Length: 253
View 1: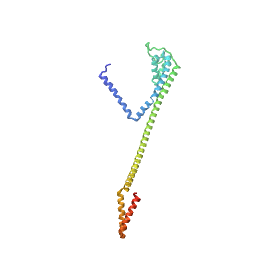
View 2: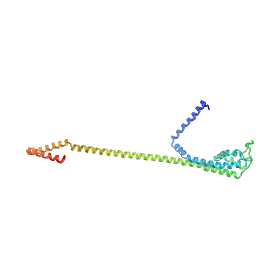
View 3: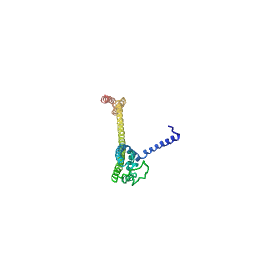
View 4: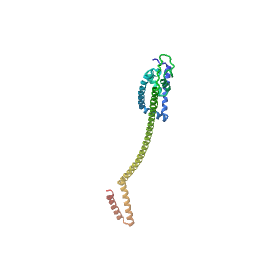
């Protein structure tokens, strides 16, 4: 098979039309509609299968009854199926009913060729009942069933989207609360660690030689000051030594 350059360019341009599918993600309502169609796909397939069985049932009956009177619309099973679809969609279905109600010689036929020549056979009672039941079943029942399935799927998709949005919002709020709690807890632990560090430093300082020397100088200074006031230097020195020994035993032993 040889494909010319012109046909290849035209085919490529047709493929470029698929870019229009990006518009589906732009409008939220369109996204909900597409989601509803996708979600209701298996139900739609089931309805189509059931409708096919119903049409086949009507087609067999219609072909047997109206084949001779209306070969254009009921000449074979496949043609009858197409006629039933036309009737179910209300496309000039009344003309087909009148042909088989009054007979092809009284209504609708002007064919003179042997291929489409009809054998007049009117069905004034059966034809109205047959086509009324067909319209009721094919149009009023199945078409509305299609609409109900798509609408229900759209509502379900919309509810799922709303629930997903609400769940995401709740997760966001819970995450924010958790982060705030973690930050507050982290600050508390940092402060507690700071207090523990300063307490440890204070303990090290109190147990260190620098603090001992400072305390010794303070005690000696106080003792000499007291002895100088009483003019008893030896007594002050003895008092200072006694105080230092007591302090070493009481505080740093």
